[in-house]
Amino acid sequence: MQLILEMQAKHESAIQESDERFARFREQTEERFRNLVDVSMSLAHNLQLLGQETDRRIRELGEETDRRIRELGEETDRRIRELGEQTNYKLDALIDTVD
Image 1 (tube, rainbow, N blue to C red):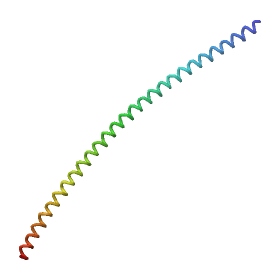
Image 2 (image 1 turned 45 degrees about the vertical axis):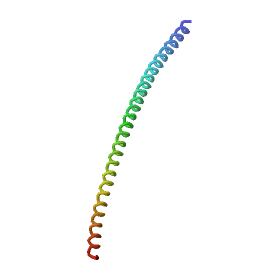
Image 3 (image 1 turned 60 degrees about the vertical axis):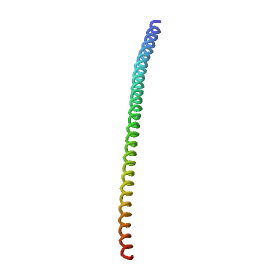
Image 4 (image 1 turned 120 degrees about the vertical axis):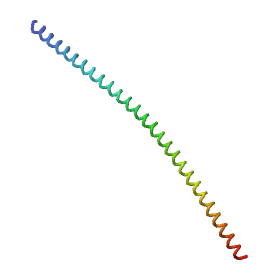
């Protein structure tokens, strides 16, 4: 009978030890999972900020491109007017010479 009680005590001790190891493993797993969630949330937040910054930079580049195109158009118009005036002056001079 004593042997059975000792075996049962060892078995219960082994079960208790196994339960304690499982509880520690579960706590560690839960902690790792919480850390993973925190990292994921941080990553999502940083990606959102990066997206906002990218949108801002694209908008600024678009505005800069629009400004440059507008300036180029204005310069082109100015040059065409100048060339037109020069052409008119030369044509008038040629007409006066022919008349």
